Image (tube, rainbow, N blue to C red):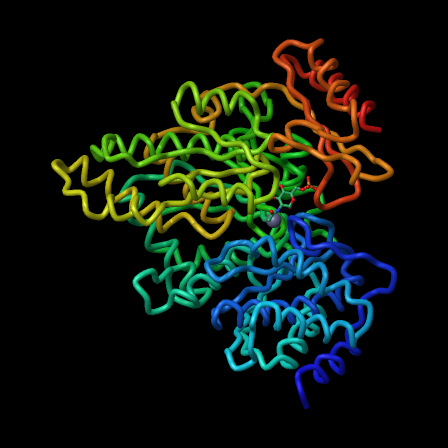
Length: 537
Ligand code: 16G
Ligand code: ZN
């Protein structure tokens, strides 16, 4: 049977839901899982085309809805170097998925192949994984039917964290080359982390234990796997909590990085222990937030993505200086979004004296901007982020001849960090190890880290609106260009407060607007957020 006919036949088993408009957004396709079966099938078709377009390199498909409730799911595509799908292809994904009939779907598939001169003679390879949601199994079934219909080779990695799949895509495509990213297996991922951790620690001690809340998601079992690999190699005491993946309904429920960040409090279960160094992963383990309860005052301190970015940037700059590479021209920079706390931006620009770039929300934007630096540190305030090292920077670290043991130590640490950090995408496990390494080097507690600057009080609110698409932004989402007059109204409210800043933007993942406000005091930030919410309502 010709491919066109095979696609039509297979598609009949996995129809999309009539009347629903699908869109490839910042996190791929994400919605109630029962709307997604046809989408998963169609994403399989596109991933196969993408692989052929990229000369047969492996393309990844991840089935996850991250921090969303258990009933949701999502499907997204990973490009060959482990990065997010190229933007032009997001549009193709949206068009292909919305094809109204099975015939038209197969026609659209052929049309894309023709437009991009893709021939079925080029081999295609897709590798995939899913988080712990029960609905993932069925979605993978639909995906595989598409891969079979298009003669695509595939590897099923079963249950993975999102960053593990990104790692595997890059490792697959660089295997046997001088850019090799690591062994092509889940075990290879842990081995790389353990080896890099040992080199980055070099006998230093991590004080006390780290409690990790895994959001009852895939991060739990994977963290246990990591612990098996690290045992006996590097002394690190990890206490795993909220790792129940047998009861799907508890996924992301009152726990996880998104809960901690949005509620600005520790998960109620297990009962927080004052003084304990704690962190939370989100449901697919690509976000990380640290926090602790002050044993003296019992107040809650959160160390979010902005804090991790400033900690990592300051540490790397110190190492570059210690390695006597200050004059080498290595450009270190930080990428944030409008949600970054103003105090973090001031700390990075004024205290660390580093350039800060602001981009729209969504990892792909930050990642792209970070590539313009030799060492690009990017984090969203919500805890998603990583550090990118350019090839030139790595070459400089490797070729520099140390003049003292201290210089050698700094160079070795820089190289170890580049292996410890998952450079494909934000990775909660890898980022947590990075934080642990930095705290160990500096001999810092979370209190020391929290003292570097004081966050400006802030408030984030979600506003129900009739049509969120009316809200268009400019200046990296810091200003509204539409509807007319809205920005002027926001400006006039902001002016009434000291040290204030506020913006509104349409969510990329829900039909709502988000409003963020910062001001000198908590009550003023709350009040300002309410006023801006009123403007956009
Ligand atoms: C997605 C993005 C995340 C962003 C969030 C914003 C990726 C992989 N994920 O989850 O980075 O912070 O959307 O959601 O890019 P919002 O547009 O609904 O505020
Ligand atoms: Zn996530």
